[in-house]
Amino acid sequence: MDIRICKECGFILGTRPNSKDKDGVCLACHNKDRKNQINWQERQNWLTQYLKERKNPSSNYDVVVGVSGGKDSCAIVKRLIENHGVEPSRLLLVHVMDEFTPSKAGLYNLDNLVKTFDMDLIHFRLAPKTFVKETRKSFFEELHPLKWIEAQLYAKPLEVAKAYQIPTVFMGENFDFEYGVSEECGIFHSSSSDEVNVIFLGSIWPYSNTDSLKQARQIGFKTLSDFDDWQRQGSADDYTQIDSIGYMMQHWTKFIKFGFQRVSDLACRFVREGVMSKEQALRLIKDKDWVCDPAAKKDFCRTIGISEDEFNATVDKFANKDLLVKDENGNWRRRDLI
Image (cartoon, rainbow, N blue to C red):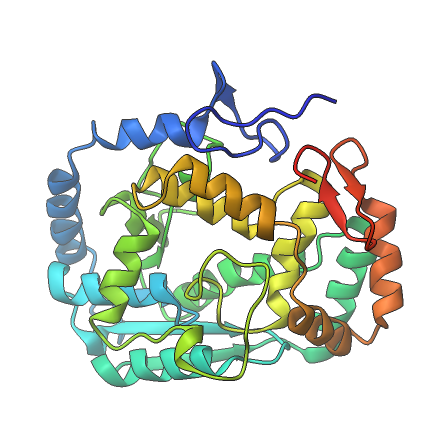
């Protein structure tokens, strides 16, 4: 098959499920221009008024934020408190744990977030055997290893909100808009209901990785480079998805099926955010997008109880040979970049 890339950002076209492009430009790049047509101040004013009106005096909390401790978590909490008048004591954090090895940065950032604003936090640990069973199932059957846990990351904060009669749950970016699946930068998530509304803060404040990092650093956020436990490979940065080591296999396995992983996602977003040129992004994608981080692979295999040979055999089974070919060292690479 012919492999096409976006004329503006360099992202591979037509392989991300449900993604769209027009005239050789991905929808995510078109959406970058749509952001300039949104009245962000109007949306921010609306949110401040909404939060005043949606308090529940019968509950101890007004807002739930599902947090990992990452940059987006920090930015959401910081803006709700500093820009929209949410009292820290009325904001409940919900952290859904996975069974992989946590990074030092991940542990530090979650602890720092809670301490900085002196908030209540629920650690939600899912049944470990169920986590392993579901992860193995999705890995062997779909090469979509964290399908189950990612569903829980969204579901559990909503369940907690309903149980505590908390009217609003906040999430970060509007994924469909930012990654070019939808043209709509809607405020509410599809899970919103009369009982609980789920709101994208990235549809209230214009979302970008650089903005979230700036906000997070202002409250003491640290990156992988600030610690010595994980020298991550196959990555475009040291500050996104840094909470647990084995989790990175969720991103890398996308490369095997669709010809891109986290490096492409971020490098092309950096182009849209104006902090990287298209040429720089393409070089980064060629050099790193195919790389499977050895520490993440080892941690993933250890956690779900499989050997690296089993891992490799499963990967080979799902490899998209229209897009990929093995190089002389046995690594799957995009055929147009090898």
